[in-house]
Length: 270
Ligand SMILES: [Cu+2]
Figure (cartoon, rainbow, N blue to C red):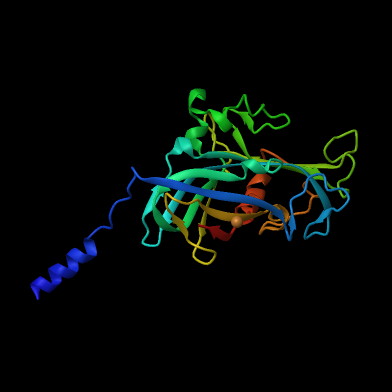
């Protein structure tokens, strides 16, 4: 009896072998941007997209940050990619940026987790800890290509712009009447003063679309579809005419909730 109990007990508590962190293998997550049932095309004025509110629009700009990648096995073991190797800026206009390439231990993974945006810890680090895609100078301030507001407001996590005929001429105070929409969504919670937080942590189950079998002799790639139509058509659906410009404001919290819905796993290449 006692022996049986002990055996059962030790078996239950017997931990899985640890990850072999000296033996890392290539792994990537692919962010394949789409718009509803169509591919992403820029300045598609000849063939506009239509959202659920029936508004036609074209897209002129798309960039977003992906960070803090984690992978989890079927038994629940999680490997966290070292943070400094886990920041990526996806630029919709440059297909070479669509992969977040990291190294993880050889294993079969059934879940991936990542942050849409830049975590608060990194957002408040000294500039010498914010290099590469996080360099505020390289990302050009808040101008064209810019993904950074400033110290207390931090990074723009998701920047999406385009044009829609439905926008009234003066909605953006644009005297040229360009009818432009701008969604600059960010906010890590603030440093010197508390602000909104729009950091979104996304976890995707891979079992239906294909487990990631990470091995040294191959490139396991988790292919996601990122549906930009969800910006408008997510659970907090809105019309472009009502909100043509959303930046650092309370309403951005509502839009950010839609962003969580953009990501879905399509398939895995092993
Ligand atoms: Cu694929």
